[in-house]
Amino acid sequence: MEDSTKALKALTVLLKSSSSVLDVIKKDMIKYGLNPTEFSVLELLYSKGDQPIQYIGKKILLASSSITYVVDKLENKGFIQRCPSAKDRRVTNIAISEKGTAFMENAFPKHEELISSMFDVLNEEELTTLTELLKKVGYHASSFK
Picture 1 (cartoon, rainbow, N blue to C red):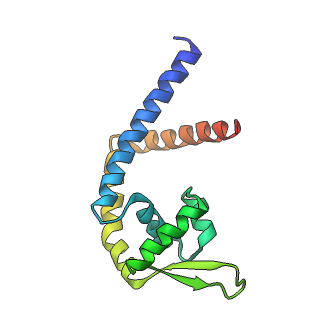
Picture 2: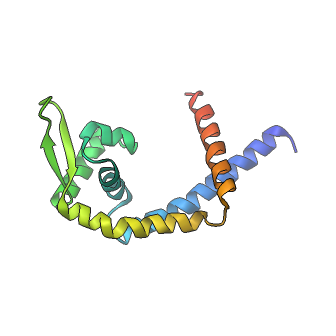
């Protein structure tokens, strides 16, 4: 098989696999009453603590215009709160609320277990290799921008 044919096959397999994994993850997030973006914001705040609103958009790859909408929805549900920065009045930090923390303490371990179970078909060495190879391709692809 030619190198270009192998690359196209690898891309097809990567995209189909990624789509299957994303479908499972999205369905899991939705069953908790949040869309995937809302869940991702809560997950970031739960694991990393308070974040500037601008950083959240960059971290979960969301346009700044959309992040305000998502933050508003999560704030209306009582899961987060806006906190003006003490150091810079132009910066608004987002903090997870007690309700948001309680929600994530319940939902996240189950979500994490689902993710783990999708990868349990691989042994530890295969999982490490997969991670390294995907990073390698991703970093190389980013050089084409």
